[in-house]
Image 1: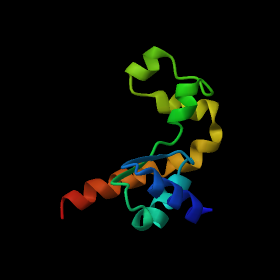
Image 2 (image 1 turned 90 degrees about the vertical axis):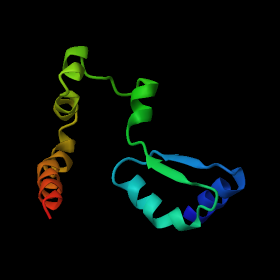
Image 3 (image 1 turned 60 degrees about the vertical axis):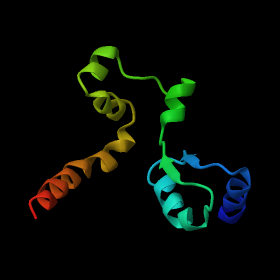
Image 4 (image 1 turned 180 degrees about the horizontal axis):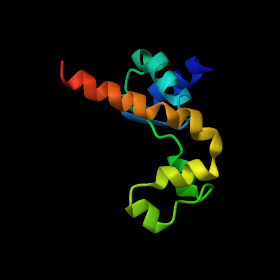
Length: 101
């Protein structure tokens, strides 16, 4: 499946590729295939962006978005995200610690 998708992208001549498999599948796909994507210069995982654009998943209320807590709204509506979101503080801590080295 990857081989066909990669060949089709190469034939298209596209230089930018947006992958929307959801996290972490899209990042794994990009990592597994980036060397074979000959014309692609930028590959980015866009996660659930298409779900928001299409209206499939509603955005948080404006006040929550302005306050920077849309993630909390999404967690409330999609509790399965808890495990993934629970790793973020540890990641942030690692980033902060690596800056001091």
